[in-house]
Amino acid sequence: MLEALQGSLFDNPVDSAGAPQLGPLRDRVRRTALEHGAWVDQLPTWLAGGDLLLEALLHDVPWKAERREMYERIVDVPRLTKFYEADEPLPHPLLIRARDALSEFYGAELGEPFVTAGLCLYRDGADSVAWHGDRIGRSRNQDTMVAILSVGSARSLMLRPRSPSARSGGHSIKHSLGHGDLIVMGGSCQRTWDHCIPKTSRPVGPRISIQFRPRGVR
Ligand SMILES: O=C(O)CCC(=O)C(=O)O
Image (cartoon, rainbow, N blue to C red):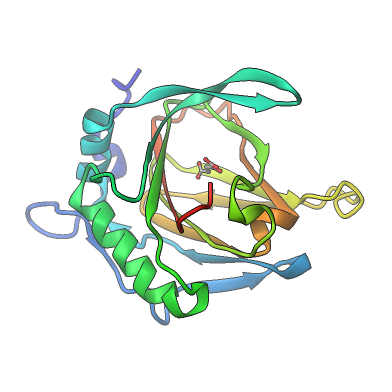
C-alpha cells in the first residue's frame, strides 16, 4: 500500500539534512470569510522539507481502520486514522512544534490552545472522507477552530454550507491541499459548513492529514 511513496516525489529541500521546518504564520496566513460566520485561513507550504516527516509518520504511527456512524449505519471509513488525546505523546517532534506554533498564533482569538492531534492516512485516491462537520463535543454549538497540516500527495478539501437550502445553487468551495500546506477552519465553520476529501481517479500516493483541535472538539 505504501510502496508508492518515494521521497523524491515530494522534493522540497530546506537544509542539507532535509529536516522539516515550519515557516512563520504572522503576515503570511490568508483569511477568507465564508457565509454564516465561518472562515478559512490558508498558508501554502507552511512546512518545508516534509518528506522525512511523511516517511516517519507512515512508519511510526499505529494506524488503524476506522468505523463511523453514517446515515444510521456503521460503515468502514476508507482511510486509516490515529487520534492523539491531549495527554498522549505525539509521534514526531515536528507535530509538537506545529501545535505550539498554532496555539501561540491563534491563542488570543481562540481563547485556548490546540491540544489534540488527529492523524488520517489516505493511502491512495480511493481513500476519502465523506461530507461532515467536526461536531462531536463543544463544536456542536460553539465556534471553534480546526487546523490541518497536510503532507504527501495533494488532495482536494471541499467545503459546502451545511443547510441544504443554503447550498441549493451547487455552492461548494474546493481547496487543494499540497505537501506542507496549512488550512484552518474557524468561526462557525464546523457547525454551519461541511467538508470532505473526495476520492480521486488521479494516480496519487499517500497523504497524511494532521488535525489540531482544542479540548472537547472532535
Ligand atoms: O483529511 C483532511 O484533511 C480532513 C479530515 C477530516 O475532515 C476529519 O478527519 O474530520
